[in-house]
Image (cartoon, rainbow, N blue to C red; front, side, top):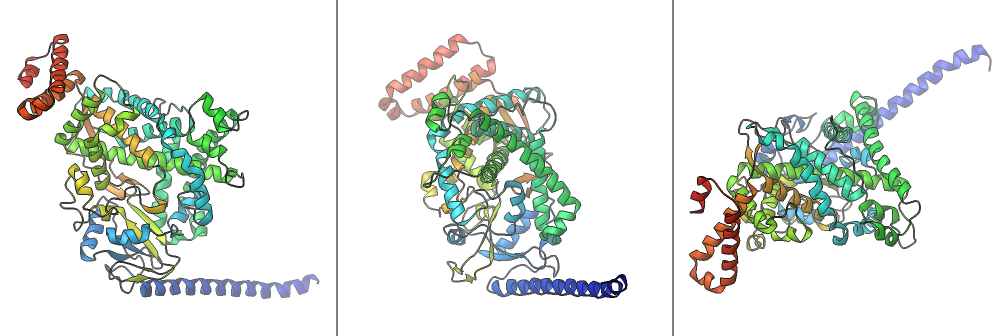
Length: 563
C-alpha cells in the first residue's frame, strides 16, 4: 500500500473506530438501564422512601452527623426492610430487623461485588471479601490463630500497650480541658495488634508526628466511602483517572509498604525454623507464625499474595474496628458516671493491688462486660454489611428477593430498632443480663456479625476492650465534654466527624479500693442472714479494711465517706 492509498484508508479506519466506540457506549448504557429496570422490578414488594432519579438517596445523607437519624426515620416508616438507591443504577435492600437478618446471615451468600470490590485493591482477596472454596480454605487455615492458647499471652501485651497510652494521658489529667480520644486509641490498638499478632514493636505510640499507616487507613476509609456514594466512581477507569483515585493508590502504597515490612522481617526471623513446635519452644506463637506455617490437607500453604491479603485484612480489621469500639466505650462511660463507678468498683475488687490485668480476670468483670456490650449496641464499630444473593431468598413475612439482588444489613438499624429494644437510645447495661438476653433473638445484637461468616477475631477484640477499659477506669475518672458531642458518621468503621472528646482526672486507687470494700461490707452487714451465711468473708473484708486504714492517713472527706 503506497502513501496515497494510506491517506484514503485512514478516514475509513477512523470512522470505523468511532462507530465501534458508539456501539460500545450504547451497549453499556443499555445494560445499565436494564439493571435499573431490574432493580425496580426486584424490589417491587419493598416500598421505600422516594429518591432522586439520578442521585437516588445519596443527597439525603448529608454526612454531617445526622445520617443515622435519617436512616432510623425511614426504618420506622418501612418495617423490616426498604430499598436504598446509590445513584441511578445501584440498589440495596436495607434490612433492619433481627428476623430478616437471621435469614441472610445464616446463609452462605457471598459479600456483595460493589462495596467490597472497592476495598480489594487495599486489603486484597482476604477473609473479609473472599468467597466460595477460597474463603472456606482460608477460614480453616486461620482459625488456629484465634485459639485461646494463642490469645492468652496477648493479654499482657495489650496491658503494656494500654499503659503506654495511659501514661501519655497524665498531662491531660492535671487540667480541666478535654482532649480528642480517637487518635490516641487508634495508636494504642495499632501498637497492640503489631505486638500481639506480629510480635513487632513499633513504638508508634511514643514516636512523634502522625503515624503514616493510621493516616493512610483514615484516607482509604474516606475514599472508599466517597467512591460508594459517587456513582460515576463505580466505574474503575473513571475512578482510576480521577484525583481521588490517585490519592487512593498513594494511600494503598503506604499501607502495603507497612505490611510488607512486617512480613519481610518475620520471614527473615523464621528462615531457620519452619515448624510451629520449634518456634513455640522459643517464644509464644502469634498470628503471623500460624499464617506462615499453615498447611491444608495437600500440605499447601498460603501464597505470598494470599499472605499479604490476610495480613492487610487483619491489620485493618484488628486495629481500626477495635479502636472505634473502644473510643465509644470510654465516651459512653464518661457520659454515665453511675455506671462508670460500678465498673470501677468491680474492677478494683478483682484487681485489688495489681497494676495489670490477667487472663483469668477477664471473666470476673461481668458488669463491665455488659457496659461494653451496651456501648457496642449504641455505637457498632461496623455499622453495616452487605451480601449479594446467588439464589432467591424468602424472608419471614413471605416477601422474596431474586438472585442477583444486593442486601445491606444495617447493624445500627437493628441495634436501635424500637420493636426489639425498649428505649433504644438509653444506655442500659442490664439489657445484657442473661435473663434479658434469653428473651431476645440472638440476631438482635450483631456487632461481630453472625453465622458462618462472623468475625473470626471477635474474642481478640473483646479481650482487648476489656483490658483497656479496666486499666483506664482503674487509673482515671472520665467526664464528658458537653460542648463537643460526637457527630457519628458511617465509614468502613463508625467514626465521629468532630472527633471524640473527654476529660479525665486521676483516681486515687487506694481510696477507690477502700470505698469498694466498705460498700460491700455494708451490704453484708445490712443483711444479717448474709452475715450468718458468710461470716468468714465478712471478717476478711473487715480485716483488709482495717489493715489499709492503719497504713494510710486520709482526709476528713474520706473519713466522712467511710462513716
